[in-house]
Amino acid sequence: MFLINRGEIEGRLDSSSYHPERIKIIHQLQSRNWELKPLKLVASFSKNIVSVNPENLPYIGLENIESNTGFYVETSEKESFGTAVKFKKNQVLFPKLRPYLNKVHLADFEGLCSTEFHILDSTIVDNRYLSHFLRLNLVVNQTKYLMSGNTLPRLQTADIENLLIPVLPTETQAEIINIFETAESSKKQKEAEAAALLASIDGYLLQELGITLPPPSEKKTYFLTRSSQVSGGRFDPFYYQNYFEELNCSLENCKYSLLPLKKLASFKSGYAFNSTEYVDDSNCSLITIKNINKNSVDLSSATLLPDSFYDKYSAFQVKKGDLLIAMTGATIGKVGIYESDKKSLLNQRNGIIRPTAISNGTFLMNVLNIKWFQDLIIRNSNGGAQPNISETDIMRIKIPLPPLEKQTEITNHISAIRTQAKQLQQQAAAELAHAKQHVEHLILGE
Image (cartoon, rainbow, N blue to C red; front, side):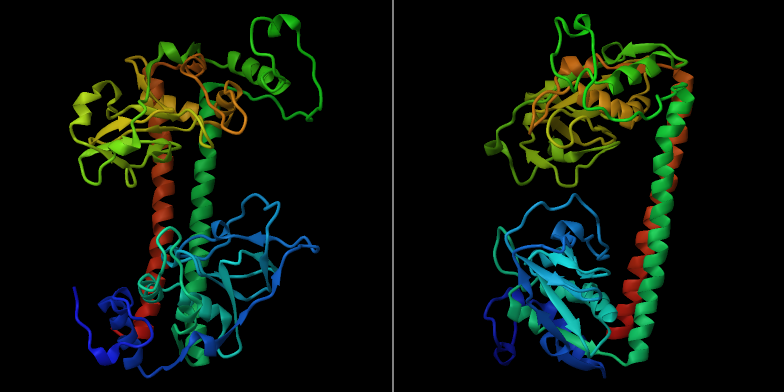
């Protein structure tokens, strides 16, 4: 609840647009000595809409822009679109949809983008400064109160056009650009170092297990297999391709015995809870496919069930140290370890892999998440558009099993790598956050 003077009401007549947080930011901007202009007087809004792409220009959707940084994230090529907006290098892409995601992008190439972006181009301020300013929290903390619509919250053009932009002296703009470019360069470098560390895990694990992968071979459009291999089993070419045969030979020649997963762990499928049973508040989480990541389980957005369900459906309880595997969909085969003490149950289309005394759970997870074991999981899956894998097919996968001491040694080494990578990622994020804070103090004052 808050109060506002009638004389301050203009334009919109809804409570959220006059939220004290937004009004405070506007008053802070107005209290400074900067020249303030609405965005529509600072930049032109390009509307070069096209329906074809004869130049084969790259296409940018909202999914291609990283939140808070504006970095371009490459995804698979968009095969078709109804209409798009053409943009040029150094123009600013400002999204209308879900402004709280903060996906403002400065283009470093010419291309096409979703019509959910406004294309901004300024001759009054440097476009680099404009893009950095529009990504600041002081802007997001205004626009989040200007959204309309529930399913797809968006900004109206008039509200975007009237955002106040400080037209700073050229040297101050240059200072801000330098602050951000320095922080962004450091962030990219640290994230690249973290990515290299994480990429080294598979090679280290293969070396410790004594697995020598077959050399890459030329992909062929045909191959031969024996009828005795096919008889009584699957009858599809994907399953019998040479790559899998060569991979299995490499595994058989590793330095440790291979045991099927069913000898190293028990398995339990999740339960089909009904969405009508979900609640808004409880201490019992429901883990679904969206919560299972490679190497981890994220409860931050978990669905909730009534507290009484935890004991009522005790067979589907998730315990600390359990491995959870996605059994269908785009993330099929991904394995995460549950490291929480919170009460949780597992939803259908996922499985609990509970290690026995002869296996280290984190070791098993690391092995199962190696690319080549992920390939074996996909090999055993069924279905086309929505692949799925059964308990039987998961538990028959063979795992190299070193002595328990060696499993622990490998696990500790990999954990140290992940910790180092996470520290680099956190440092990178902190440097950019500090740069934003510095610039906001420069613009708004202390």
